[in-house]
Image 1 (cartoon, rainbow, N blue to C red):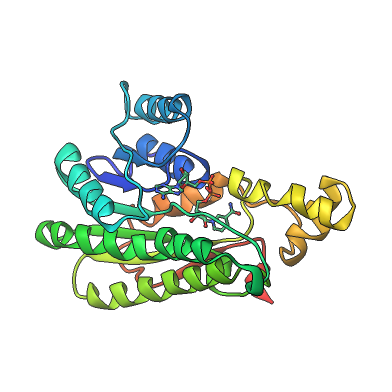
Image 2: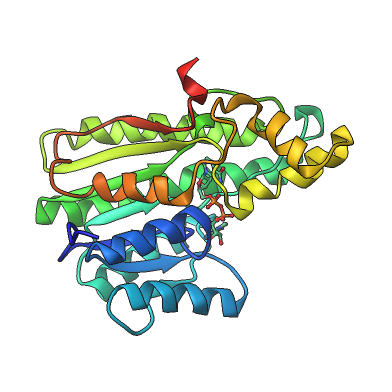
Length: 264
Ligand code: NAD
């Protein structure tokens, strides 16, 4: 791995698992000092800190246990990252949750949680991180949106709403920083092989009375022409590229990594 992020510092929300952990690993291997955030069993958090710490050259990676559904905790997490890492050059808003239900039965509390975690947290983190980026005249903001930031699916009212909001926020921030060496971009993955997506296969198999293999191919990946998972590493490499040499002119873009989903 080329050390394209040597000397950079990064905070990645939701990096105890899935896509966030993959981005943290690759950014660490590329030379960045990384702070982790997210939930999990103590042993899972310890393993994430150890693996990313090893990629940074040893010891445990710094970690914030902030619940990003709470604006105060988001602000404290950004301040903690700035203090612990010495600065905050790269902010990756990645943490997210999912809930699937017809809108008439969609629980209000799930709507509120998804809007807070998947969308509003991005606003609060960017607002807190931008002054430091402006002061140092360099910054990278990457929001992990979704193909569902560009396309709708039934039964995902809160998720699709939040992800469309994230794409919109990405563009507004891009315009506000356009004259500076700071950029704001979104990555819009299709279905990526992580706990969040894999958890949707079992219920689909049950609903349609088919095996998990058939449910994955015919129902979950119905809209993904590749008919295979996008891999965590695909998203991680894109995130590292957006922070590395040659990325300065890329601003306000929602990059699809979705096996062809949004091509049609
Ligand atoms: P995941 O479930 O593996 O990881 C989610 C992470 O977010 C975990 O670390 C979890 O602890 C953290 N998290 C959840 N609620 C939190 C909270 N309140 N405060 C702090 N951390 C919290 O999921 P993933 O698939 O890696 O998803 C990561 C992002 O990618 C999400 O925003 C998701 O919407 C997006 N995404 C995923 C897919 C996919 O198919 N997996 C597709 C498109 C977009």
